[in-house]
Length: 465
Image (cartoon, rainbow, N blue to C red; front, side, top):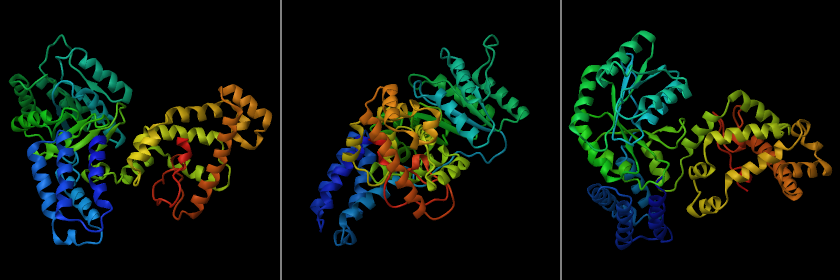
């Protein structure tokens, strides 16, 4: 997300980095590039003017121009203003009121509301909640069926009206809330109909639904790829419905970012969640400070660790750490770690969260198909016998030739993999021995589990070779 904007902003600040002193002309030139980068990202002109004006006023202060490393001061100011632009502090969905909490999703057609409803159901289910999905979109063909399929995939019930009875969406919502009160569903998620454009019929129907079920949250689902148009219709929805928040979808796409960077400033309504992929698990809380850090190329290690913690089973992690310390880590453990790596998502997205990984490093990483490389390593292991996977020491010359034939690779490639595997075991054992605190190994030996500090040194980069 924000790849193009991030690259342009980092380029603007790279010219300041090598200067011991920064002049007013230097700041003006950097701000000109920032302004162009934001406009190309489809950020509202009004928002761009206010943003650049605030940054320039602060960056031209004496404490910046006469500091030892003024470029860092400028970047810090931009970071602070980006956080403010994105909403300042994190805004969460309110689930503290009387049960059930009713969440009404609204938006234009094509924004991804129905899929988002499924993601939201899974999001709350993981928190120990008992959600109910409600099919209030009776106009789009197969919308009800789509929600039912999503509900079955995540084992969350779906309330849908019999089409023969032809009940109105507000009535469907009311009946669903009544059922939720009886069945103990503490979260009710209303998937409402969208339109290709704002029309009064849509707004009247949503207004009736709001009056009938009094939702705790009215969330507008916004396609992050829409740009400034998203701000325009967000203002109209907010004027008539009093929105409580936004959910940005398709944030994993090559979006220019204009909607996310403009919508909070223009409407005053916070962004609460963001969709970052097609999978139903790909829904994240919206942290303004973390996103600002990603945009400026400073990584997002907190989100990275949280992803690792979600992927790691703590009992398995403790057992894995013991194996690593005692050099008993084998290829069965390796396959289990690959599965956990897959839960984290594409490796390219993971490395974007690592502080210090710049564009050149990512380009070098992206020049190689990491999934194919991991697939080849997995194929080598799967060509081994159960005894060989459990005891790597058994793999002699003839066995290596048989493994190579089994996976369609050369003996040299198998030898390289085995050598890398042994080196990785040694590196991870040394890292664990230096790491204080409670037990708990990392996903693929790369990230710390709960309660652990990041060690100095390697990142398990052999997975990308």
